[in-house]
Image 1 (cartoon, rainbow, N blue to C red):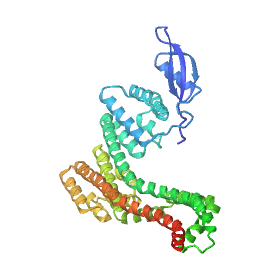
Image 2: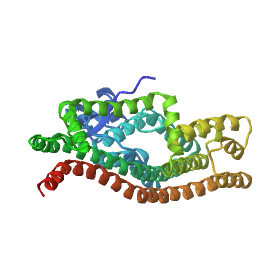
Image 3: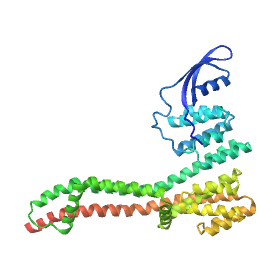
Image 4: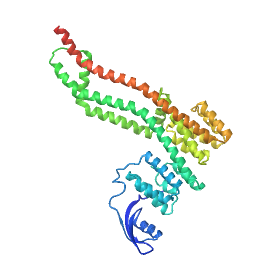
Length: 406
């Protein structure tokens, strides 16, 4: 299917049914469609002109998952208050500070006004609305419970975004410190040590081994700093691209991360929490188990759990119970399997999955705090060791000279 043309803003003037002159703005994909929309609303368009400045602000606005989460909650709240769907889009779109979200929401409004259902309008925008989102909305439309589904989606996205934020914070702190350490060392190597090197050259004596090593390293940095930074940046970018494009590399890295002390525990618990939360939301919305597993696999955030979930999907399709297929993966703790088993036997599997998700989201929170507490002294010791070694190396010749003078 060809990608739909993005909606633009049009300023219009026309006559209403009473002969009164009216004007306003509307989002649409072409001038002809805008005129057709106005006529359906009982307005005879006299002038329609595309606005010169697009809503997106020249393409500089970025739509984040948080924006979609807030949009889902706003839409659910307005529908609960009895606001018609099209009017809710208008209110949410006009009131959003992010110009990109304005364009997105008003574009969806234009599609719905043109006769498309909400699911089709969302599927035209796969970058913002994934299969899970579209499948749940479709189930809500078919069952006539769109309002309830939107509330479930908003709650689901709020919890998953909170979980992602916790995991990112666990990874960001050590990464930021390492980058800052690299910047500080680079500054010392390029600007500070060369000043000491000029001073040492006037001594006319052999330098201590540590000092000579630092001076030689500084000379390399000064001469080849552009190549060092280029190679480091290229290596990071290349590693990220290889991870995106190579399934084998993804599997290797994800398996390695799961085996790491403390951090592996955070990632494993996070994957289990996302698995349980996503499956709970889809099952509660009436999505068949087999159909739900594909979206659940994509939501796990780890290719090891993705592969295991897709294998579970095949087993469930042949009649295997969820608890048995989970046990076969050797990834889920016995407590999780037992709770799922109770849910299957009692017919309340979505409730039990929700309890599992709540438990593991709290476990991730605790594990992140433990990781931060463990990393802080290690990182401080690492930084102190690096900076201390450089300082000692630079002052060793001066100490030796002081001893000779005495």
